[in-house]
Length: 124
Image 1 (cartoon, rainbow, N blue to C red):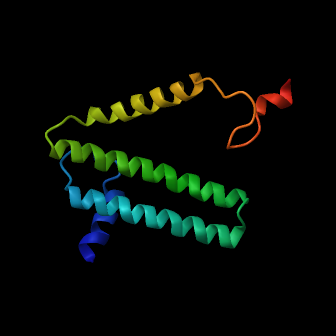
Image 2 (cartoon, rainbow, N blue to C red):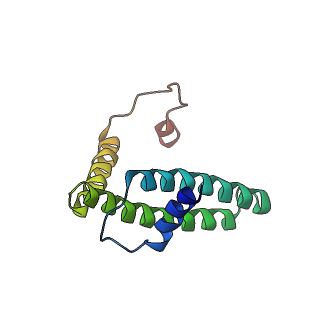
Image 3 (cartoon, rainbow, N blue to C red):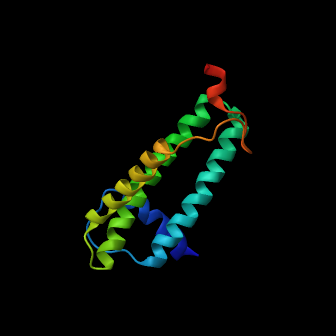
């Protein structure tokens, strides 16, 4: 169990370390424990401060930023472990951007559908 916890802590210890290599197991444990930590922190802040509280949103946003930084660092080191450049991580950003732009370009359905009424109807 200490290896699992150390893999998680190493994500934070090496948050700005983009050199070297990382094992698959360590990265997988980090992602799993980070997901659990995110849900625990979100649940606790939600219970303490309410679902719509600004504190809950601030804590969740801060944890998300830390998660992004640690995941990026771990991912770069995982790519290094596969003898690949860490610059490949930018491919994820490009791919995400393509999907976002594609969703903006999709033609909406006319009228109501299974997800609700047409939002454009209110502005016509």
